[in-house]
Image (cartoon, rainbow over all chains, first blue to last red):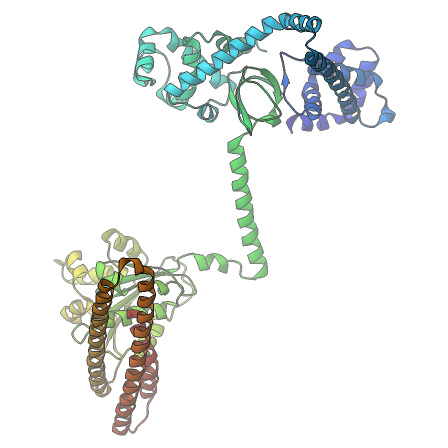
Length: 249
Length: 381
């Protein structure tokens, strides 16, 4: 509801901003679009009824284009802008889905004929996607490895959801602690052998209170595992947050 | 706000992801999604279980609020609702066994507990929901039946403590209980009534004795410094009163003999007669029961194991017959008893030609007594 409420709050100024954009203010247009990205995503998922994958973001870019088109085509006589934009996005996405469906149909028919020529075509398409494909296999493999190791430590993903620090700052703090622990061989040996977090030892070596360790125990163990076990894709993914906050993004 | 996350697990009703901010989250499941895929999602997709629960609690709280408000709207004295639930006073009954009742403002028993092992035997589940005077009466009757109250041991102590300071209403609980015991109990009973202040509740609780006994202990220990709580706890009320009769005369305790002496003797005779009768009846019943049991056992031995089902049917029939016999006996006995009572009554009436209120009370007490006896007999079975 958050983004929707925001939209309603700004409703009074939407028309003014649109006239400003139409007069050729590109900066305002970019700002406007980026503000309405949650709305665009919501409009897309309303049609597709599933999450938008970043790796396969045709839908997302079509949605953005449709929104841009809606800005250009909007006139005050067409009712509220939000409703207008939503219908534009919906029709563009439906058009795209129809197109994809048709392509699939043709391929499936050709597959049924077992035509050599077409097989070649498919191979070509696959090879173009290979880089993406291996990467997605890697991350899948890393996730299943992480889950297996967490099982040994008797931690479930559900527990991680409930017991992870909720605030970004405290999460970054916990990741930082985990990083320091993962660099300390002595501590890591205890963790690997006993499958526990040696709180007393850690408080002696790292500047952290027992309370923080206790409260975030499972999250810290999970993060230590990610950093320790060569789960590089996950590691780079979770540590991105530190860099982003440092740079104020 | 737009979030990004990698799918870690997909279940039927939810998926688990780790965000690019290293947060583990549960999302609503929409269509097919593979593990390892990075997705874009919005705040509304997140399943927040804690939030859900708090909504439920809020809902429940709202329902209660509505109930309270509406009850206060419908009844002009809305706070009656609370007063019915709250413990308004504690009433203890000591004979030795000790019982303690928690009652609300309308003097309905909310909770009964026994403070010693003997107390359990005179507790009755039906006491909760009764008025306090009926509950006390039932306790006294049970104690008579179990012979905690007899000729030597005939003092009972009733104490009432109001749990709150602002006790605007004056209770006539003491009079009620006295009247109902006078009406319905034929034993000679010494009734002692005290009303300690509310501090006694805590102190008594700490010492695990009834509020009545604790107050007694306080009174005695003022005069006799070497009295211990244990002594008071273990002694029966009769013994305590007899030892300290002088003490209690000056204190706020009222001693009341509920029967006229002349009448008492006659009634005692009747009572004795009744008791003997009852005992004989019980013996008879027991013997009958034993004989029956023997018969069953013989039957069982005779019959084959294969015919177990038929056996059961026979047993249930037999027990039905037995029940009928017992009931017939009882009816006969009751008749006899009533006739005898009537005769005794006539005698007494001749003795005392001047009618007074006490006499009327006694007659009504007798009439009430008989059905009670019936109930008790049935319960025993």
